[in-house]
Image: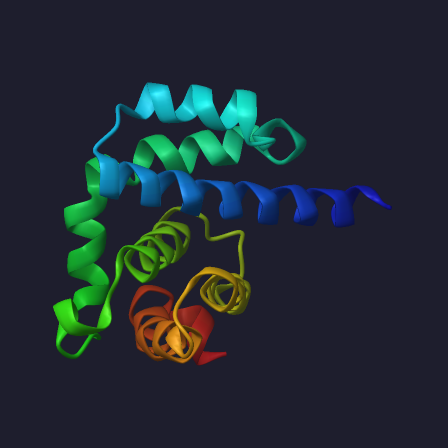
Length: 146
């Protein structure tokens, strides 16, 4: 496996574990340091991009309200459609759109859809795509226009 393929695989693993950790944080209210230790020691985070996992774990909770406000306008009946899994998938994607311009917006959407297919309800991937598509046009206007 070349370095780029290894990096992509590790980044996917970090996103996957971050989603699980953020879900746990949202439902249990556990301390982020405890969650970090649990995932680093028992959930195999170290086989992925540990630095990226930690960025998502520590930067998303304090900015959750601001992240939610960015995508919320593209959600109809917010509370009825979003469960904690979908909410955290959209938070991760919104964070990536805002703070990681090196990740093409199509990759951000694709990775969010994969997470929704793996962890979300039956059609949540369609819902996630429907929210992220207009959000990308807003947050990555120049990139999306190409």
